[in-house]
Image 1: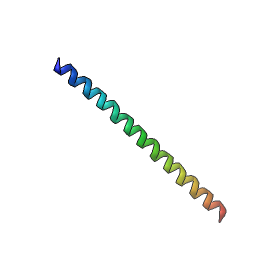
Image 2: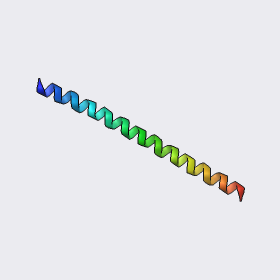
Image 3: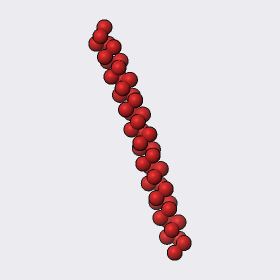
Image 4: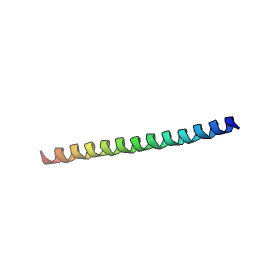
Length: 46
């Protein structure tokens, strides 16, 4: 019984880490897009 509880806990923890990583990836992608677009706009203004 304890083994099943531990497996459930680990599965939930794994899901939580996946969500955290996905959020971080989305944030990084948005930052990259922002800086790329920002550089393009700055390049056009020169």
